[in-house]
Image (cartoon, rainbow, N blue to C red; front, side, top):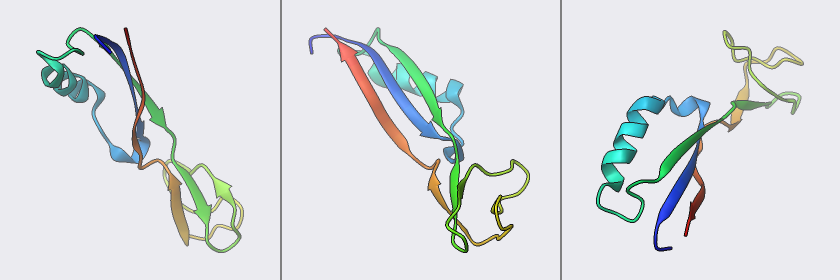
Amino acid sequence: LKRVTKVTIQFGEMIQIVPDIFRFAFQEGIRGTIAENSTLEIELIPIRLRCSECSEDFNPNPLQFKCSNCSSFDIEIIQGKEILIKSIEGV
């Protein structure tokens, strides 16, 4: 690439990154590079859990992380902790 025009980043909701702060850091980090005038798109990946008791996959209740099927608290996080560069576009 001679010039980067757009970068898309995906963050899991459990990462707790403040998008405005990340945008500022991104703009500072790309200064003087081929990505200097690129745009940043941030996408959130929702939290997804799996119950260790009944193997149910589910999205958690915002107030309580327990299985929506059997009410067990023995759960694992299977999605929502990621930080991914989804795409880099340019010319």
